[in-house]
Length: 104
Image (tube, rainbow, N blue to C red):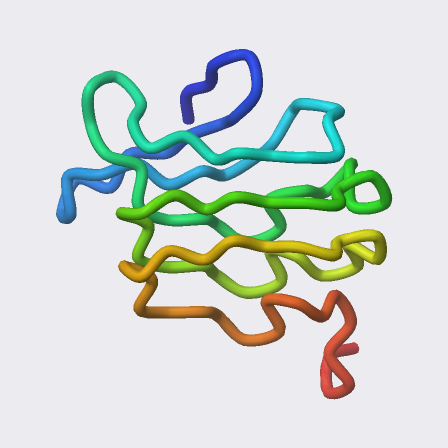
């Protein structure tokens, strides 16, 4: 895993792109990056906002992102606006719900 000031990243060697695995900022509005170290960022890993779920209000996912994994926005109770790109092809199970009914 690698990081810059705001995000943690993991490189996918098969797809030659980065996944965002964590957000370290404190802003209510989050604009996800399009590149990291000259390679595209295309995926949002599960549980992106583990410590900021109560603060996040607005998220911009730029064009080029293709997937959002499970429970990324779960328990983001103040989230009122998300901008999705046309490139998005996959949204994981419970992406907007932090407590699935069939999970212990």
